[in-house]
Length: 257
Image (cartoon, rainbow, N blue to C red; front, side):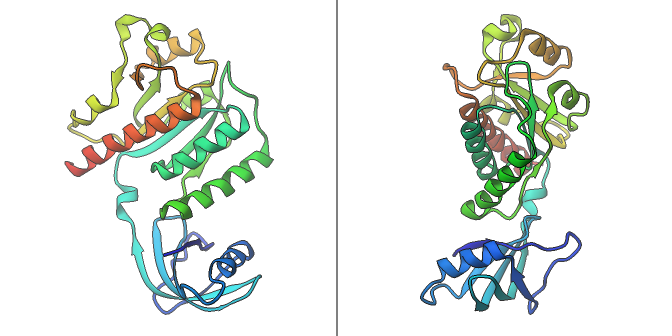
């Protein structure tokens, strides 16, 4: 069943029997997808965890009207720990690929980082495009929660206000010294803490890697270095690999809490 995005005010949750209208972009998409009268019933999401099954009442290129038939709240989206990706800004196409995969892999918040070896601040126009990419991703993967995308922030500023919980950073042994050997995410899944952290945060560095000063700061803060395998990964690959592992950790911990 096709998925579409429903823009609503934060305090408004449509109920069965309500009539709703899609915005111009989604209406055009629906009109294209349903050409020929196919699939009169579709799935809508508000990006805040609600999933609506809706019947198409009327549509044209500029506006589609639907009647809500059922409402479901995906409570698993709000179970601790929530996933956070804090990733260095890298080349445009690679960062956009990482954004899309992060949404598919269940991240709840994405923070673009400005690091010593990374790219410069991408500016507001990129943020708008990034949000569009993320919105398309939740429809493609059938998810009902649209992750929060933060403004780009300096790494040191993020570390000063990082989310409560467990923070890990991708590293290779040469970056951190053998006394701080990275652990695997597979091993983490089997060690369920007595109290679940609020967040699981992944720090992913740029293509040039973390600087020596950045790694030293991570270790002073007690952040956990992790290994993502025996090979050096591109930043976007590392982000996807790390989030896949952390999603496994999250599911293992949430299922036994």
